[in-house]
Image 1 (tube, rainbow, N blue to C red):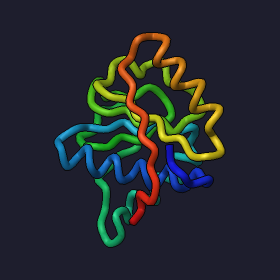
Image 2 (image 1 turned 120 degrees about the vertical axis):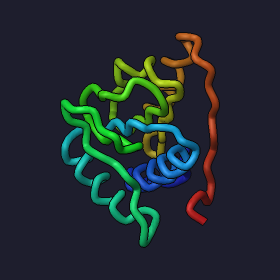
Image 3 (image 1 turned 30 degrees about the horizontal axis):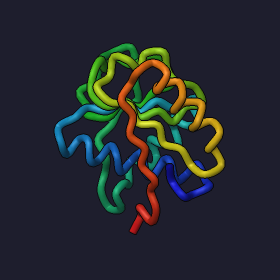
Image 4 (image 1 turned 120 degrees about the horizontal axis):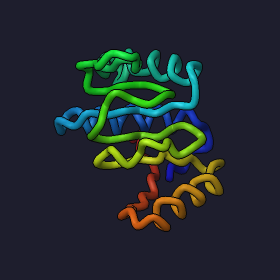
Length: 135
């Protein structure tokens, strides 16, 4: 959970996770709520980290070679890391090796519901309290 209140912090943190994952050779699907959110994340990734670029594509019906996919529908990617920034747990989460749910302070109750969902189904969970992560 991020100390931050704004969802923008979750978007920036998702960029950091994407960068870490692709540096480790892991493909990422970043699941977003809708086209507005996709466009916002797409714009952010063109300059993240500052003066750099996170290679990514918006999911379409065709497979992509970019290490990061952005989408609000079912992805073409079948493995790797799923980062969920949508309001719901995507039904396809089980095909990924890892799932990251990024929760900001004003989403604590929703985060608890998601935590319980995964826990009740026997998925191994790790909780990270992230303070001063942008330093």
